[in-house]
Amino acid sequence: DKITLEIALGKIGDIKDAVKAKTDQLQRYSADQEGSLVLSGLGNLFSEQMENLGDIVQGNVSDKVEISSKIKYTYIDMAVKYQKYIEDITNR
Image 1 (spheres, rainbow, N blue to C red):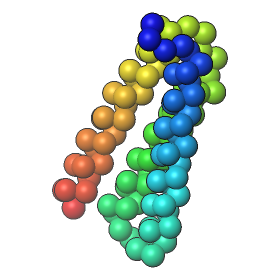
Image 2 (image 1 turned 90 degrees about the vertical axis):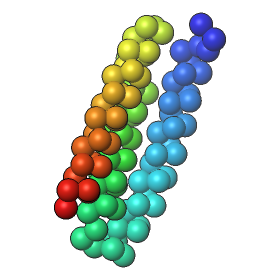
Image 3 (image 1 turned 45 degrees about the horizontal axis):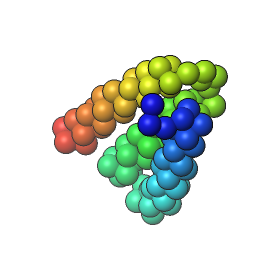
Image 4 (image 1 turned 180 degrees about the vertical axis):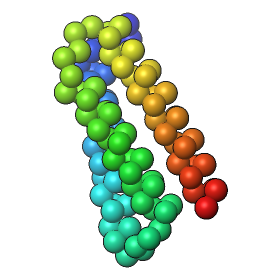
């Protein structure tokens, strides 16, 4: 109840924009470092999370409970994918 639905969506949109900027930066680095599993994996991780955040912002969210649920499940998804990314780069 501390922020409105519109404010929450705006903040998520801001986070998505920041993730996009980092994704673009990683793609530039990856172009110079072809074959880098660390950079390519991190770039993929950022791209997937940017899409997840975009789904929240563009979705038809009608109440605080629904957006809270979507945020929570997106956070869990991000944590699981990050764990997989760390496992992938440390096991090679």
